[in-house]
Length: 461
Image 1 (cartoon, helix red, strand yellow):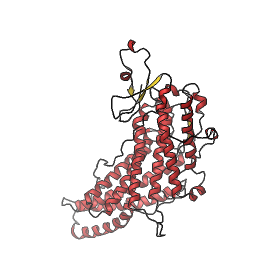
Image 2: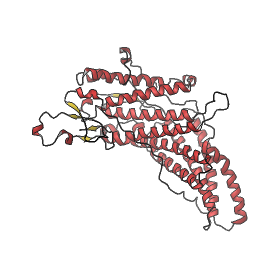
Image 3: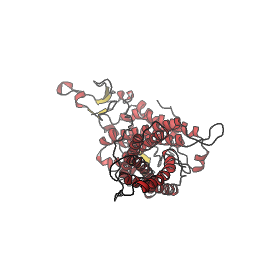
Image 4: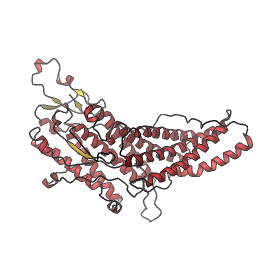
């Protein structure tokens, strides 16, 4: 697991640059900015606390994360534009592999309590926080940072999948259905990392550390990011439904209403996050843009269903919904331009997917229904407010990402031992050795409490 680095690499103290993804490029999936780790001399901090072999392994794995994160985050816009899709993908895959390899060794510090890590201080750069760097003496902070970066890498890859690329034949750029399906899988993958941080790590993080976490690692921000990934997944699902002649109007409305619900939750959470001024404006504009697009779709399909009804004033309600859809669609395009012009500037992508469909259908349907209304239903009363949209629970869910088992190298740490659980679907965990078992009425297994409840978890004392 992980590459064996040279001694020069282990001492490399140059921080990885923290820059935005897609600066100057088109944004289909918004990635605010990847957090970057800074060099930490773990050997100096942990000398004598753990075995030399484990210490060297830990330093090598974190240094590999540091090096690959630097390659994944170019220092300038010009470098970004010169990089090919293949280069972007390969460096992201290398960084993901380095982070995944790092996790099992890192988890050894929080099994049996965070006692071994009391002297550790981890430092990361924070793009969206006013404090450009945060250094905290907690492995839980490091775990949150690793999961956060894994989630952002998946978002980054989803954006690449949805960015049109010219085919080999040289025709106009396009995004294939396979690209869209891959993007949905990547968005679900991103959501699973953020959900794991919320479920498995944040609840166990000491309150004193929670109070010092940067804005991009707080609970509302992680919830916003999880829902943001799911929201863009629902948008792609709606696009498939729109293109499918067999998909019913009810199915399209349900997806559109789910789309609204998830973006409303993103908006509620992101407003609670104390982001730095520039980043706050950019992120809020993106959320507002997507929420308006979602409402445009929901009002449109809800209006079409209302127009098929026979209840009193239902056609007037349908016209009101179609007008609301048209207004939301126009407002969303204004906000999209504002988002693109907000620093750091990005290109507003052309209309695609369900939004391209709606931009053509909404004005046409609104005029057609208004004409029919004036001829046949002019006695109906228009509602004082826009009809409420039906509420549906979100069907799209990411599979749980469970933290891996503790690296077996921790078995050699003095005072601790790795034990098997009584459940076949749960990994081994690290527990404090009981030196006097006869004097204690409880076994170590009973005294050890799980770090989290989900399967494939790491358990701690």
